[in-house]
Image (tube, rainbow, N blue to C red):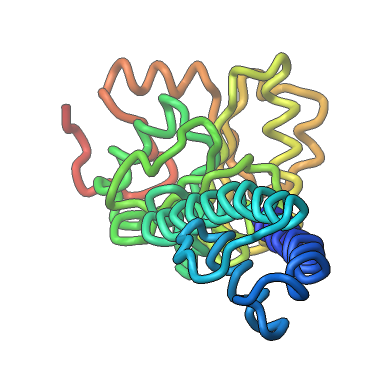
Length: 257
Protein backbone atom coordinates (compact mmCIF):
# COMPACT_ATOMS: atom_id res chain seq x y z
CA UNK A 1 0.00 0.00 0.00
CA UNK A 2 2.90 2.37 0.67
CA UNK A 3 4.14 1.82 -2.87
CA UNK A 4 0.70 2.71 -4.21
CA UNK A 5 0.63 5.94 -2.19
CA UNK A 6 4.10 6.84 -3.40
CA UNK A 7 3.13 6.12 -7.01
CA UNK A 8 0.02 8.32 -6.79
CA UNK A 9 1.99 11.11 -5.13
CA UNK A 10 4.68 10.95 -7.81
CA UNK A 11 2.02 10.99 -10.53
CA UNK A 12 0.44 14.12 -9.08
CA UNK A 13 3.82 15.86 -8.86
CA UNK A 14 4.59 15.00 -12.49
CA UNK A 15 1.13 16.18 -13.55
CA UNK A 16 1.61 19.43 -11.67
CA UNK A 17 5.05 20.04 -13.18
CA UNK A 18 3.93 19.37 -16.78
CA UNK A 19 0.46 20.92 -16.69
CA UNK A 20 1.36 24.05 -14.77
CA UNK A 21 4.45 24.55 -16.97
CA UNK A 22 2.39 24.32 -20.16
CA UNK A 23 -0.37 26.50 -18.75
CA UNK A 24 2.02 29.21 -17.60
CA UNK A 25 3.97 29.20 -20.86
CA UNK A 26 0.92 29.67 -23.11
CA UNK A 27 -1.52 31.53 -20.88
CA UNK A 28 0.24 34.09 -18.70
CA UNK A 29 0.85 36.57 -21.52
CA UNK A 30 -2.71 36.57 -22.88
CA UNK A 31 -4.92 35.44 -19.99
CA UNK A 32 -6.03 38.40 -17.84
CA UNK A 33 -6.85 36.07 -14.93
CA UNK A 34 -3.20 35.07 -14.47
CA UNK A 35 -0.96 37.54 -12.68
CA UNK A 36 1.61 35.23 -11.10
CA UNK A 37 2.68 31.62 -10.82
CA UNK A 38 0.53 31.43 -7.71
CA UNK A 39 -2.55 31.81 -9.91
CA UNK A 40 -1.39 28.83 -11.99
CA UNK A 41 -0.91 26.74 -8.84
CA UNK A 42 -4.43 27.69 -7.76
CA UNK A 43 -5.80 26.79 -11.21
CA UNK A 44 -4.04 23.38 -11.11
CA UNK A 45 -5.35 22.58 -7.63
CA UNK A 46 -8.94 23.48 -8.49
CA UNK A 47 -8.77 21.67 -11.84
CA UNK A 48 -7.11 18.51 -10.50
CA UNK A 49 -9.79 18.14 -7.83
CA UNK A 50 -12.48 18.81 -10.52
CA UNK A 51 -14.00 21.57 -8.40
CA UNK A 52 -13.78 24.03 -11.28
CA UNK A 53 -14.65 27.46 -9.80
CA UNK A 54 -14.22 29.00 -13.24
CA UNK A 55 -12.26 32.04 -12.01
CA UNK A 56 -9.30 30.96 -14.16
CA UNK A 57 -10.00 29.29 -17.52
CA UNK A 58 -7.62 28.43 -20.38
CA UNK A 59 -7.85 30.52 -23.54
CA UNK A 60 -5.41 28.61 -25.74
CA UNK A 61 -5.49 25.08 -27.16
CA UNK A 62 -2.34 24.22 -25.23
CA UNK A 63 -3.94 25.49 -22.03
CA UNK A 64 -7.00 23.33 -22.62
CA UNK A 65 -4.79 20.28 -23.23
CA UNK A 66 -2.98 21.01 -19.94
CA UNK A 67 -6.38 21.27 -18.25
CA UNK A 68 -7.51 17.92 -19.68
CA UNK A 69 -4.31 16.24 -18.47
CA UNK A 70 -4.78 17.77 -15.02
CA UNK A 71 -8.42 16.69 -14.71
CA UNK A 72 -7.87 13.10 -15.89
CA UNK A 73 -4.81 12.63 -13.68
CA UNK A 74 -6.56 14.23 -10.72
CA UNK A 75 -9.62 11.98 -10.98
CA UNK A 76 -7.43 8.89 -11.12
CA UNK A 77 -5.14 9.90 -8.27
CA UNK A 78 -7.65 11.35 -5.81
CA UNK A 79 -10.18 8.53 -6.19
CA UNK A 80 -7.41 6.01 -5.58
CA UNK A 81 -6.16 8.05 -2.62
CA UNK A 82 -9.63 7.95 -1.08
CA UNK A 83 -10.02 4.21 -1.75
CA UNK A 84 -6.62 3.34 -0.28
CA UNK A 85 -7.17 5.59 2.73
CA UNK A 86 -10.56 4.01 3.43
CA UNK A 87 -9.04 0.55 3.13
CA UNK A 88 -6.21 1.52 5.46
CA UNK A 89 -8.64 2.86 8.07
CA UNK A 90 -10.79 -0.26 7.76
CA UNK A 91 -7.78 -2.51 8.32
CA UNK A 92 -6.69 -0.47 11.34
CA UNK A 93 -10.16 -0.58 12.89
CA UNK A 94 -10.54 -4.33 12.29
CA UNK A 95 -6.95 -5.50 12.59
CA UNK A 96 -7.74 -7.85 15.50
CA UNK A 97 -10.43 -9.59 13.45
CA UNK A 98 -8.32 -9.60 10.27
CA UNK A 99 -5.22 -10.92 12.00
CA UNK A 100 -2.88 -7.99 11.36
CA UNK A 101 -2.40 -6.78 14.95
CA UNK A 102 0.76 -7.46 16.95
CA UNK A 103 0.17 -9.84 19.87
CA UNK A 104 1.63 -8.75 23.22
CA UNK A 105 0.48 -11.67 25.39
CA UNK A 106 2.96 -13.65 27.48
CA UNK A 107 2.83 -17.24 28.76
CA UNK A 108 0.07 -17.77 26.24
CA UNK A 109 -1.03 -20.61 23.98
CA UNK A 110 -0.21 -20.53 20.28
CA UNK A 111 -2.10 -22.79 17.89
CA UNK A 112 -0.50 -23.15 14.47
CA UNK A 113 -2.91 -23.97 11.63
CA UNK A 114 -6.68 -23.80 12.03
CA UNK A 115 -7.75 -27.35 11.22
CA UNK A 116 -10.60 -29.51 12.54
CA UNK A 117 -8.35 -30.76 15.36
CA UNK A 118 -7.28 -27.19 16.16
CA UNK A 119 -10.92 -26.24 16.48
CA UNK A 120 -11.47 -29.21 18.79
CA UNK A 121 -8.53 -28.05 20.90
CA UNK A 122 -10.09 -24.60 21.28
CA UNK A 123 -13.16 -26.31 22.75
CA UNK A 124 -10.95 -28.46 25.00
CA UNK A 125 -8.77 -25.78 26.59
CA UNK A 126 -11.28 -24.65 29.27
CA UNK A 127 -11.38 -28.20 30.72
CA UNK A 128 -7.70 -28.14 31.69
CA UNK A 129 -6.73 -25.77 34.52
CA UNK A 130 -3.14 -25.63 33.23
CA UNK A 131 -4.40 -24.21 29.95
CA UNK A 132 -7.58 -22.42 30.93
CA UNK A 133 -7.36 -18.68 31.47
CA UNK A 134 -4.39 -18.20 29.17
CA UNK A 135 -4.59 -16.04 26.07
CA UNK A 136 -4.85 -18.15 22.94
CA UNK A 137 -3.45 -17.13 19.55
CA UNK A 138 -4.38 -18.88 16.30
CA UNK A 139 -1.80 -18.54 13.50
CA UNK A 140 -3.08 -19.60 10.09
CA UNK A 141 -3.78 -18.55 6.54
CA UNK A 142 -6.59 -21.10 6.13
CA UNK A 143 -9.21 -18.55 7.25
CA UNK A 144 -9.46 -14.84 6.54
CA UNK A 145 -10.93 -13.62 9.84
CA UNK A 146 -10.69 -14.53 13.50
CA UNK A 147 -12.59 -17.83 13.99
CA UNK A 148 -13.47 -17.03 17.62
CA UNK A 149 -13.92 -13.61 19.29
CA UNK A 150 -12.31 -14.82 22.54
CA UNK A 151 -9.03 -15.73 20.82
CA UNK A 152 -6.32 -13.68 19.17
CA UNK A 153 -5.65 -14.21 15.49
CA UNK A 154 -2.61 -13.86 13.25
CA UNK A 155 -3.24 -14.33 9.56
CA UNK A 156 -0.14 -15.91 8.07
CA UNK A 157 1.69 -19.15 7.38
CA UNK A 158 2.92 -20.65 10.68
CA UNK A 159 6.34 -21.29 9.18
CA UNK A 160 6.79 -17.58 8.47
CA UNK A 161 9.12 -15.84 10.97
CA UNK A 162 7.12 -12.62 10.66
CA UNK A 163 3.84 -14.40 11.49
CA UNK A 164 5.45 -16.18 14.44
CA UNK A 165 6.91 -12.93 15.75
CA UNK A 166 3.52 -11.25 15.34
CA UNK A 167 2.08 -14.02 17.54
CA UNK A 168 4.85 -13.26 20.08
CA UNK A 169 5.93 -16.88 19.85
CA UNK A 170 9.05 -16.12 21.92
CA UNK A 171 6.90 -15.58 25.03
CA UNK A 172 4.45 -18.48 24.53
CA UNK A 173 4.16 -21.18 27.19
CA UNK A 174 2.37 -23.81 25.10
CA UNK A 175 2.52 -24.29 21.33
CA UNK A 176 0.37 -26.69 19.32
CA UNK A 177 1.33 -27.34 15.70
CA UNK A 178 -1.33 -29.13 13.66
CA UNK A 179 -0.80 -30.89 10.37
CA UNK A 180 -2.01 -29.16 7.22
CA UNK A 181 -3.35 -31.89 4.94
CA UNK A 182 -3.32 -29.71 1.84
CA UNK A 183 0.41 -30.36 1.48
CA UNK A 184 1.56 -33.54 -0.23
CA UNK A 185 3.80 -34.45 2.72
CA UNK A 186 2.25 -32.60 5.69
CA UNK A 187 4.58 -34.13 8.28
CA UNK A 188 7.65 -32.63 6.61
CA UNK A 189 6.00 -29.21 6.51
CA UNK A 190 4.97 -29.56 10.15
CA UNK A 191 8.47 -30.59 11.25
CA UNK A 192 9.93 -27.66 9.38
CA UNK A 193 7.58 -25.29 11.19
CA UNK A 194 8.43 -26.85 14.55
CA UNK A 195 12.17 -26.54 13.94
CA UNK A 196 11.71 -22.85 13.24
CA UNK A 197 9.55 -22.41 16.33
CA UNK A 198 12.11 -24.16 18.52
CA UNK A 199 14.74 -21.78 17.24
CA UNK A 200 12.61 -18.87 18.47
CA UNK A 201 11.38 -20.34 21.77
CA UNK A 202 13.43 -22.69 23.94
CA UNK A 203 11.11 -22.75 26.96
CA UNK A 204 7.66 -23.53 25.58
CA UNK A 205 6.11 -26.97 25.73
CA UNK A 206 5.44 -27.95 22.12
CA UNK A 207 2.81 -30.41 20.89
CA UNK A 208 2.98 -31.54 17.27
CA UNK A 209 0.46 -33.54 15.27
CA UNK A 210 1.96 -36.16 12.95
CA UNK A 211 0.46 -38.70 10.59
CA UNK A 212 3.63 -40.80 10.75
CA UNK A 213 5.25 -40.42 14.20
CA UNK A 214 7.96 -42.93 13.26
CA UNK A 215 9.36 -40.60 10.60
CA UNK A 216 13.15 -40.66 10.28
CA UNK A 217 13.22 -36.91 10.94
CA UNK A 218 11.57 -37.07 14.37
CA UNK A 219 14.89 -37.54 16.17
CA UNK A 220 15.87 -34.00 15.17
CA UNK A 221 13.13 -32.62 17.41
CA UNK A 222 13.80 -31.46 20.94
CA UNK A 223 13.26 -34.41 23.34
CA UNK A 224 10.61 -32.44 25.23
CA UNK A 225 8.41 -32.16 22.14
CA UNK A 226 5.16 -34.09 22.49
CA UNK A 227 3.98 -35.94 19.36
CA UNK A 228 0.24 -36.28 18.90
CA UNK A 229 -0.71 -39.00 16.44
CA UNK A 230 -3.40 -37.97 13.97
CA UNK A 231 -5.10 -41.35 14.42
CA UNK A 232 -5.18 -40.95 18.20
CA UNK A 233 -6.57 -37.43 17.90
CA UNK A 234 -9.38 -38.64 15.69
CA UNK A 235 -10.13 -41.56 17.99
CA UNK A 236 -10.15 -39.22 20.98
CA UNK A 237 -12.57 -36.87 19.28
CA UNK A 238 -14.89 -39.69 18.23
CA UNK A 239 -14.83 -41.25 21.70
CA UNK A 240 -14.92 -38.19 23.94
CA UNK A 241 -16.22 -35.54 21.51
CA UNK A 242 -13.10 -33.51 22.24
CA UNK A 243 -9.33 -33.91 22.21
CA UNK A 244 -8.08 -35.82 25.23
CA UNK A 245 -5.01 -34.19 26.78
CA UNK A 246 -5.41 -35.81 30.21
CA UNK A 247 -2.09 -37.63 29.75
CA UNK A 248 -0.30 -34.28 29.80
CA UNK A 249 -2.51 -32.03 31.95
CA UNK A 250 -4.80 -32.52 34.95
CA UNK A 251 -8.41 -32.27 33.86
CA UNK A 252 -11.09 -30.44 35.83
CA UNK A 253 -13.79 -32.53 34.17
CA UNK A 254 -12.61 -36.04 33.52
CA UNK A 255 -15.60 -37.52 31.75
CA UNK A 256 -17.65 -34.91 29.89
CA UNK A 257 -19.58 -35.56 26.72
